Image 1 (cartoon, rainbow, N blue to C red):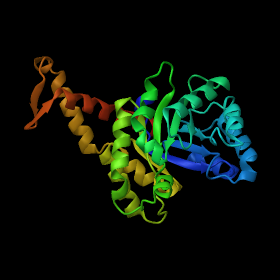
Image 2 (cartoon, rainbow, N blue to C red):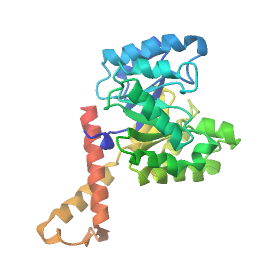
Image 3 (cartoon, helix red, strand yellow):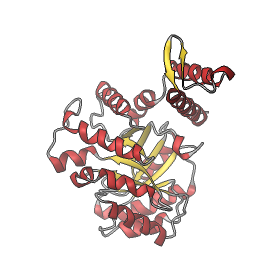
Image 4 (tube, rainbow, N blue to C red):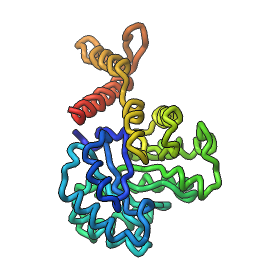
Length: 295
């Protein structure tokens, strides 16, 4: 499964200070797990959380789940120690918080190199400050630098609300422009992008609505804060049976010898173009990747 087509429908934050939660995570149906050393961990538990998270990652047992370590910022008392410890753990990605400029992305890249973190470990960054929103294009463009590891934006909508004083209303109207611009910036430079968390732990209807909003904006999946949110996110961000069937029909039609040189054809009474075949191939690849993970 290529990294770019890895399912990221549901990516669950897990407090790294909770050893029992880390063990439980190995049996959850999330596509990805963010072992959190930052917001979810009190200052006096940072060292223990780092030790437990890195030991859990190194021990393995997470199966096909993507494992991401969210470290503390490099300007904190714990950031560099987090990165140094991560160099031996073998996470799929390291997630840095509160990145606001392309220079900060470069600093994160250098920290990974200096710590000897494997070149296979990707760089994920949180987009959660007003300055980050103003600099989205420049930040995403860092992925075009030679040997860049930058591969994913993670939207920090709670922090954005705090810093801007925008309200987290149903439909997220105050944030729609920021979220859509983040999607455009990510796609312009080949990055994945994950939607922010939904705070209503008992409000499944609200969660589903917000997952659908993120999906329709172009997000690849949603970050989550409780295991009971995994199922709804997995369902919403997976291609539906109808979408898979339609994609298969379009791809098959363009693969016919008489259509291979055409840019536009008719499928089931609809005009479709080559771009629809490309979209269809991605839909089929994601559906296959989801089936492979669940198998």
